[in-house]
Length: 409
Ligand SMILES: *Cc1c(COP(=O)(O)O)cnc(C)c1O
Image 1 (cartoon, rainbow, N blue to C red):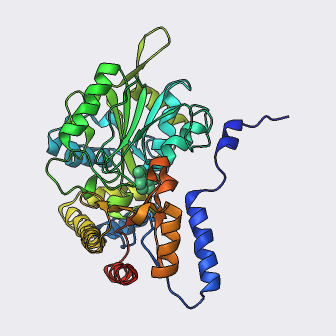
Image 2: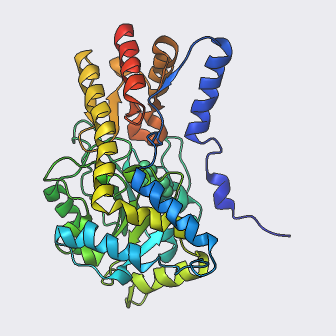
Image 3: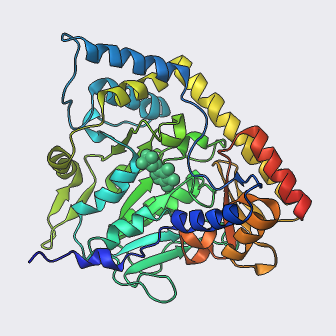
């Protein structure tokens, strides 16, 4: 008899986006003639930059000839991409890293979910609330999160509420924690940390011998000088932080799949007897066992982003989405809603009017404005009373959605 990993049974069966789809489908069945606009999509919509398409064509042609065919690549990723990352994302920003500290992945979701394998199940973890669900759920799966209470909180997880009162900047935990997940610019609140604010977290981790798992998936959306693009801009972070990057939102790679994880050689965790163990060789060992590398095509596609043409094309797409974000913010504020985020991220975090629940406001927007959003409570208890709107739709549909919302209010 095979025994199940019963931690999986603790996970809620309904995933947020399945619940949303169900409600949207009911609406569609009862209103077959009404067209809906989604400001709920967490996926990009603009096509890939031309440099990426060229690189994909070229790499495909290489696969077609025996003398340029590529089979298994290095588990850590090809040097051409690791070197491009080092130069453009780090060295040019004054950050020193080695090639061996960069691990190419097939997107940040896998690695943000998988990295917790390197640390014991009985570490304490802290997360910001609201949060990208992957961080908690991957910890639930190996039993680190404990059990879920009626208040929607896991009993072994320390929640760091992000609210209008603290400007969506999590306060340092009062108790000592072993591991903190941070994602800035943030999904879902769309807010960012300044260099000074992030420095406090790095200092906390150094002082408390904690690890920071830093998700930089939205780094490319940063518009402000004082917002760091990498946690390694902060002194001392190399000792305490692992950083996850993704080309998904940067360059439209949600379908191509590529990103990278930075594991500096100085980052350590300890054995029960206090011996310090470097995480870099452990992650390398883990990857060599469980991962056979991102595809050659994806890696050539990612390399192309770093050419001067690629950089231009990528920022044009980001500007496109950020124009949506600023337009959305302005219109929604004009009609009297409290709107946060959207300055360094493609997300707006909108407070529901009159303290309505997230789901109630979701239904109001659905039935009265024919606009789909994402209920904030789906990202954690502190998300109650908010919805998330995304800037990933086209200019035309975004503007039409705003007209509809404005007409209703
Ligand atoms: C979209 C997103 C990612 C990227 O996921 P991929 O697997 O790279 O597509 C990572 N973290 C957060 C918070 C995200 O929203």
